[in-house]
Length: 125
Image 1: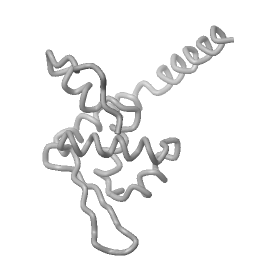
Image 2: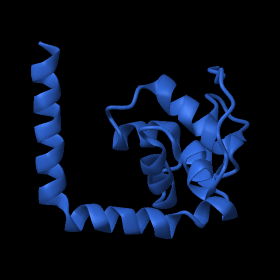
Image 3: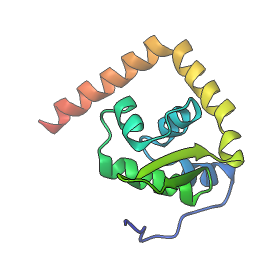
Image 4: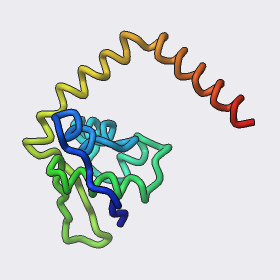
């Protein structure tokens, strides 16, 4: 498992939130668990770009930060399900609001992201 080499800066609420939610897929993972996709295979189908390794790492980090819990069922083959903790549920209104903001500004965000990516690929060549 990856262990950070530097101590995180935790001077304010934004530092704390960033430390807990930093990761490309964490917000989407929390949202999909919230709407009922509880198994790793279901999450991977919902987020096809995530590798199984990265998914597992981010699930473990969310579990370590007490946002989700993992339940292992004693069956063969093993069955694992994740659920939001009460603490994790408190993030759902914020995630929903961020998603609505993204929907309201979809055209502008898409344009600036594509412009940035096009500019970045030109400077790399």
